[in-house]
Amino acid sequence: MSRRSRIFLGILLIYVAGIAFLLYRVVLDIDPRYRESAEESLVESSQLMASLVEQDLIAGAIDVRRLEPLFRTVYSRQFSAQIYNLHKIRVELRVYVTDRTGQVLFDSLGHSTGADFSQWSDVRRSLAGTYGARTTRDLESDPRTSVMYVGAPIRWNNEIVGVATVGKPVQSFGQFVEDARARTIWVGVGSAFALLLLAIIVSIWLVRPFGLITDYVAWVRAQRNLSLSRMARRAVDALRGGFSEMRDALTGRNYVADYVQTFTHEVKSPLSAIRGAAELLQEPSMPQAERERFLDNIARETQRIQEIVDRMMELTALETRRVLDRSEPVKLAVLLEDVVASAQASAAKRDVRLVLALGSRPATEGDPFLLRRAISNLLDNAIDFAPSGSQVEIALQATSRRARITVRDHGRGIPAYARDKVFQKFYSLARPHSQKKSTGLGLAFVKEIAALHRGRIELANATDGGAIATLSLPLLQPRR
Image 1 (tube, rainbow, N blue to C red):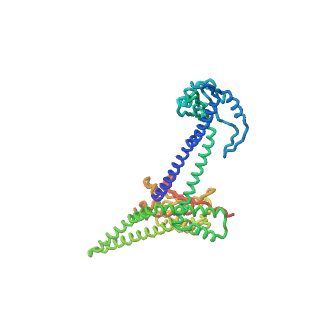
Image 2: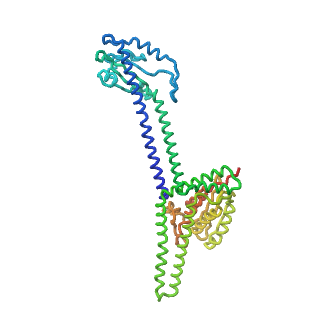
């Protein structure tokens, strides 16, 4: 992965981490806020219930006789209340009343009458004149049965004679919590994607205003027959190109610095050789044979610099493309036959035989000139690394969705230390027959061409020796 891609990926990861942390904190805070709201309502309800019980006090003795028919009636009431997404049809409020010792005199559910609740915090603290509340599970093993309780003291002549506690199942407002969490997550994720998309659009607009739309419209106008599938693929390619352009805009300074540094390093060696040869040629007593050898060296190194510059210009032109300038159906079998025929002369000089195997005759959509250059680069590499007297095998096969072009030599293969570097710019291995390196831009050139055609290039060692390059391209889809 290039440095510019790593920088852009780092920025994207920071953005995602920031949004994820914000959503986590917001979602985590939802449940406590709902509990606070529910508890606040229970405080008022418990005070109301304590005041109601105080109306029936007789000389400080609590009379709960009218509470039982009251709650029997409340629990049997039939109603239908649609509270946003919650449909409520019954009263879930619970009430119990204790005396000054904490013994339950009344329980609206009828389960705990006569029990000793003096150790529950809502009763104990309320009897002590402080705020008392608790949350307890009906079933210890099931957190969904939790119930919130809030107590209020029952007073007679400024003396606390009992406690009225009101409870509400957490599950009753837990539905609101779950709904709020789901809505918050969906809205947060949707907003994050919308913001990211807006940032991409704005960045592309700042880098090259309306370039994507202009290119796309120009392509549509140039087509004689249009299909929805081809238009969709073209739009995806345009967006992918815009995304890469935005990435380059964000990390362009580092990218250019890397390019210049690497280019300078590669040119330094032939320049040093030229300078050394030129200095030696100034010696008047140099033999003619030596002079000619140094002149040949200058010409060779000058040619190498020219090749590096030419390849750099071609590669830079490819990298700045968002999509292909021209696209047409390409018969891969015909293209391979032409490339192999053109390479026969260079292969014969190296005593290498070219073998072409056409397992099928598929077609793809793309630029025939660029595809020819890519395959020629792969074939030239294979010829350079093939031993004298061996053969280079070129094969074409097709699956249901992709065409696969393989170019294989029977040389020494790729060293382990070079397997992750072969597609890097300016990285090259010495040719076995000459011990000289190439410009190191050929495979990078092929990689860019493959990406423009929605394909991929792979280079690996064959199981029985040699290296095998595989260029995979999408098949031409039939027009509708």
